[in-house]
Amino acid sequence: MKILAFVDLHGRRTTLKKIVARANKDDIDMVVNAGDLTIFGDKLNSIARELSKIKKPIIMLPYNHETDEEIKNICKKYPQMIYLQKKWLRKKNYLFMGYGGGGFTFIDKKFEKLAVQFKKLIKKGDRVILISHAPPYNTKLDILENGEHCGNKSIRKFIDKEKPNLVICGHIHPCANKKQKIGKSLIINPGWKGKVIEI
Image 1 (cartoon, rainbow, N blue to C red):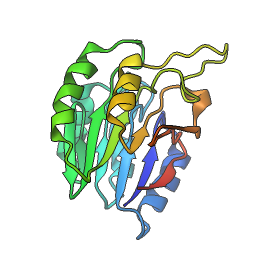
Image 2: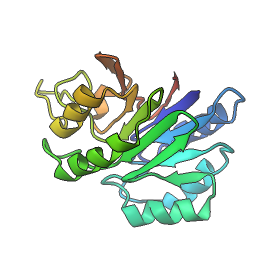
Image 3: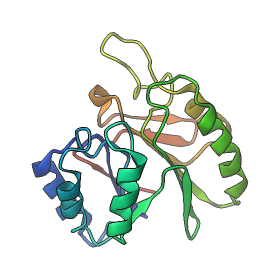
């Protein structure tokens, strides 16, 4: 499966057009928006209209620049958009989990509670993909400009324990396009320009 993932677009129209063009090429199976599509919801409807030109499934997460309700309503309007906040999606042996929270906390009890449920869904042979706006703690993807790590420890704990194949995250803009392996788990911040990931 080839995924085109992007995050922290924040309304960049020229970049969005390039993402749409790349997503519609034959080799892409799935598109992932890991949150912050706009700047505080500004022009969300017109941005969603442009995004809807993608004729592939698009996983959608809210974060602090869009509310749950805003993203949920957009997904109701466009059938290819899949609202995955605190939800799961199975495509054959690919299991996707979406969580848009945790970007401003070290410990996230809501995620930890959800992770217990998610663990029960994993079957032998599954390719597990966690989509989280927040990066895991103590990685190349959660470093602030002052050198401090600001990621989420609850998400890191889940990765260490459950070893998902792929984690797509964002939130920390200077870490765009960075990636790191934690055991067998590949952690990627695809940035606003997007990245094609084969899994």
